[in-house]
Image (cartoon, rainbow, N blue to C red; front, side, top):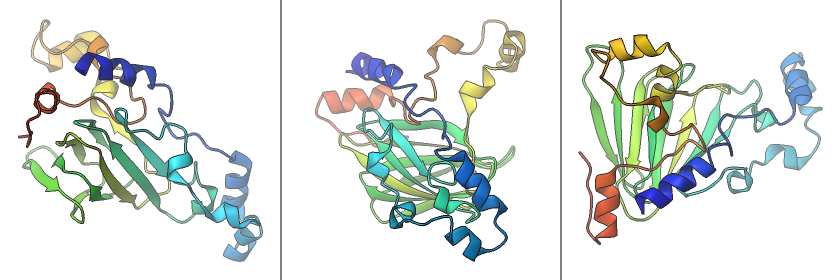
Length: 226
């Protein structure tokens, strides 16, 4: 099962790696408008005010996805200072450690059980939460955080960020962009640290989760995480 999910994850890697601006000219015009009334004249159709998360490229629970509604994907949000995201996590799927350089992130669970982990800076303690439907946690701007669906069914969460251009930086994918010798030294020696080839691509935002969770689901058991 783990091997199959890993293959699926790699095959979907190019589906929605980063947000693509769907209408650059419209976004530019909205940013340049002098007043909100001028902006409204550019959004002439009711459909300009509707965003369908499920219709977006990359929307999936295999292993999962992050679908953002922001200025790039939903031009009506231009100048609104807001991003809304739907976080889909298939069984045991996770969002790898990442940060948002330009936004604080509020995450509320809609279905399933998701463990979240966050550390804000050097010297700060690790904050862990277990989110079930109706429960919310906060990831301050720039904080490093990750989450995993600990169940054997789908988990869904909604994320609100206070920027229309929140940005996402995956820790390990970014780390291995640095020179190899510096990365190895950061791990404490030439033979320390994982190989870059083993790090899943950014893909749709979600990756296959821990082997322990997958094994528990395969054997009909349960997994609560750490």
